[in-house]
Length: 327
Image 1 (cartoon, one colour):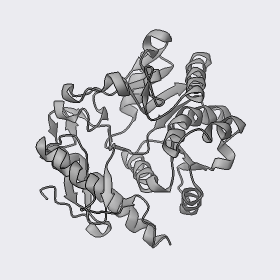
Image 2: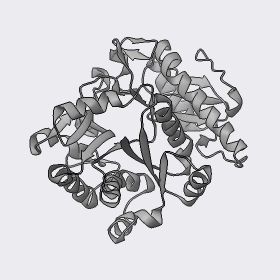
Image 3: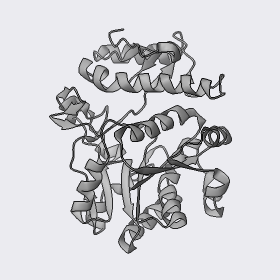
């Protein structure tokens, strides 16, 4: 049995459900602890009765410390701050041997057993994953070498020492800006292999494929990257609109759009349809209003076109499995 945790509000609920479904599809034995970051997400998740999920409300999760922090952060910054605290909560309240934190916008194409077996073989107590930036997109200096997307902590003295150190740092400072060598909850990880004992950096390139690194790999059916299975992909900054989707501001090949993004967009459309059937006919959180005339929209398209990037594709709730990456 593998134990995972994630957190999201109603705006990311369909992505969180896509994450859950992707884990189910791999056939792995798991339990996913979901921290529902608003009342709507909690209500919907509890009504869906997901057999492999434990839903945790904010009233259950937040203590005096977190409520104090909450007033000093934006919603996004508070979510970042709570990544480490959600791991700590699960380990301490459910007395599990280990737990793996997952960003809600990742999606599994193969079993996480592949990655967790590597971690077990390392003998380490903490697992971290690198960004592995394509050189032209290298943001190590400002965003960090490692990505808070798939992190495992063992419930032992060393694992908890690392986790508590991280929680204390995020309590002190966790904001959406680069300042004094810090950025959000993420750049704190940069020196962990040197600062702490028992920290393993994931080596499997299929764990953490993402828009900022996918350009350096040969992507083939499976999907695979350089002949290795894509275990999970991080769909960072994918935006949905009524009739189209903005996949990314990074360069994506046709094979990436077809083999990686297409299944995910279909999965999201299926989930919106599923929610309609489950008694939520008006649920549209996560779908943005499109305004082609807004200045920032025009500038975004112009800036990308100058770099030969066009990642706007047709998409809708009613796509019914259809998707055209050429538009």
